[in-house]
Image (cartoon, rainbow, N blue to C red; front, side):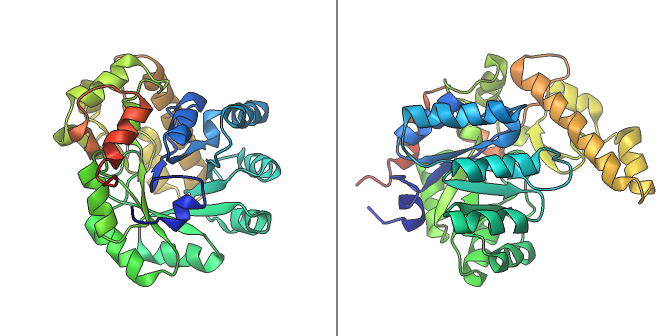
Length: 318
């Protein structure tokens, strides 16, 4: 089998990262992924308190000695960021994934401790900036990604970054089958980040309605909207989303009219959007907002994490 040094350094047999998914990833999913030969990360924001985050890290470590990561939102909207970073550094997690902000502080603290830092990027300009700051790898978030997606297709973004950057590139978005994985590696990716496919797992702590939606809906039902969180978000076009249409709402309109208040309004919109997604993830209501990417096209049943990993990696085992 081809060697994948970045993932081997993380104790993974295969070049797959189970993406950190807000309100989806839990310790059960993490342990199952690590024991199945891939690596994984969990969003720090999935835990309301620092003690809960510490307990989750401890619980994973009690069940496996494989390295794993934590995803940090590094912009001002995350008031818990500095404490989360301090905790991750103190407990020496395997790696940190930074999103939605400047990773400089994270990189400067973690690098001397041997903690790798991977940065979400959507374009070459930002990718070059984080590489110059000392990032260990970039996660190329394409237009096929679930959640906060980029603008470029994987076949555009990955080769562009590989050509211009001196660090590894992990492709994120549109991967649910072994053929998808093979295609990403042929584009030059050093590995892949997979999210949506793992929402439809037995271990995922979301509602059965959410999981079943991934089976019943298809790629044509995925839409990109700014209404929920203030930034482009890919979701399933449920009847509730259809009822919202393109209506921006009072806060969104105010944000673009008032430059002085824009930062604070954006934080409020993001918080409100997080609460909406949280309610929908745990139970089905008429206000259903289910985050997913176009890879739901290839999700046909709810399976254990280990089975999803086996189906993704079958082309690598020859």
